[in-house]
Image 1 (cartoon, rainbow, N blue to C red):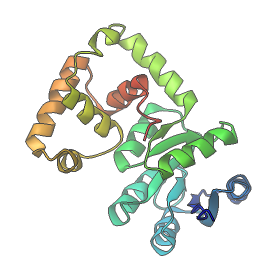
Image 2 (image 1 turned 90 degrees about the vertical axis):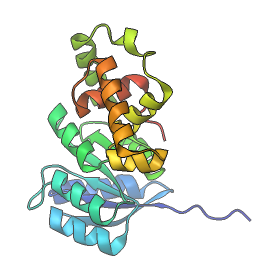
Image 3 (image 1 turned 60 degrees about the vertical axis):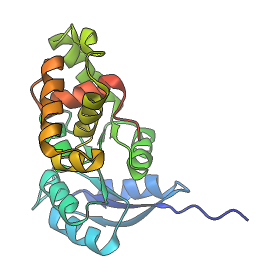
Image 4 (image 1 turned 120 degrees about the horizontal axis):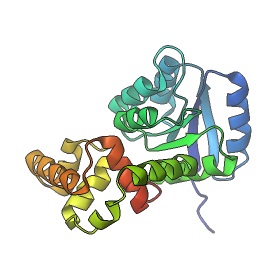
Length: 220
């Protein structure tokens, strides 16, 4: 007899009760997911996450008290194994950059179809990363407009530099990358600096854009 599959346990964080109820219906309709709780503000989200230990926290950015960015950083500090998936109306790069820096594993727009959200939940629950297709498309367009020669640089990175860039795009710190790759922090910093120089980029958000172009943000 086949062993029953464990369901992905989801905590919903949004300050609008109607949105939370709608998300419960969408997620609850999936045989491989269950909603274990919901919160309307950041502090409640952190408290519930500590109590319930969900696999995925759906995090709105604009919530009372601790906003979604601060709540994500706090959650990753005290409950590092939780996967935070931003669910927001904000399409601006600044919000994406801050959520990735705070430790979010994915970024989905509320304007997108439910299927996009469900794909994202499954991706981050399995340890992967996910970037909403609408945001990814715009980011690729913006990056291409600013750096038409990017394609000429794709093959210039060494295997190690590419590995470091990929982990940075996924939100890992230099210290975490050093531990994972069994290298010193100084070596990681050197690989990062070399890669950014080769690619002609200057910030973490541009690293994320590069990762989008490489198709890394939807892989595990």
